[in-house]
Image 1: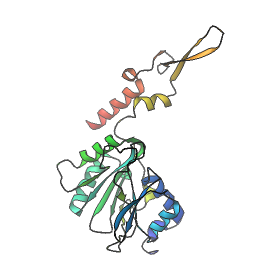
Image 2 (image 1 turned 180 degrees about the horizontal axis):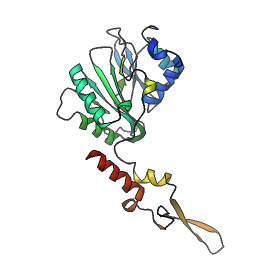
Image 3 (image 1 turned 180 degrees about the vertical axis):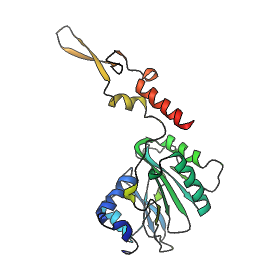
Image 4 (image 1 turned 30 degrees about the vertical axis):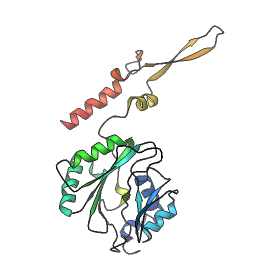
Length: 256
C-alpha cells in the first residue's frame, strides 16, 4: 500500500497533510460519512476524524463524503461514470466550464471513474444539483452529486466514494488521474454571485443608519446605506447593488 501511495506522500507532502487536505476538500459535513464494508456501503453517524482518513489512505475501509451540509450547502459537485469514454467526455466539458485545477478526475478502483469540481465558497444544494445536471445534459447512465436539491433536518443524502482508497471488491486503489496530487487542486468561484444577504453582510461599503433618541442615546436602525460610489449615500438594496451588478455582468460576459 505504501508503494501505491508513494507519489502522493512524497516530501514535502506528508500523510497527515494529505489527510487534512482530504478533510478540507471533501467533507462539507463532519458528523457523518460513508463506509465501505464487506456487506456493502453504510452511513456512519459519527464525527469524521483525521485518523479515519489516515486509515482510508493506508488501505483501511474506504470512506465516502456527503456533498450536502446540514444547512443544505455544497462546496463541490460530482459525477460517477461507468466507462472511460463517458469520463473523457464529462471531463472535457468540466474543464471547458471551470478552471482545470479545480477539477478532479480519478478512477474508483473498480470499473468506473469519478469527476468533481471544487468551489471556494458554498452554494445552495439546489444550485449544486442544477449545475451537476447541466453538465451531463443529453448523456444517460451518469450519477450526479448531489443527487438531491436539499435534505431534511434528519437527512444526509447520498455520499460519494473518496479517491485513494482501496476498493473492497477489487482490492485496487482509486488512483488520481488529474491532477496528480490533491495539493494541486485550487477550488474556483462558483459560476454565479453569492446571495445578496451574504454579500451585504460582508460588504465594506455597507453602513447601518442610526438616530438619537429622546434620552440622547444612539439607536441603530434596521436600514443600511451604500457608500460604494465615492462616498455617495444610497440605500443598500439588491436591485441596485453595484457589486452584485458588476459580478452578474462579468458572468454574462464569460458565458457569451
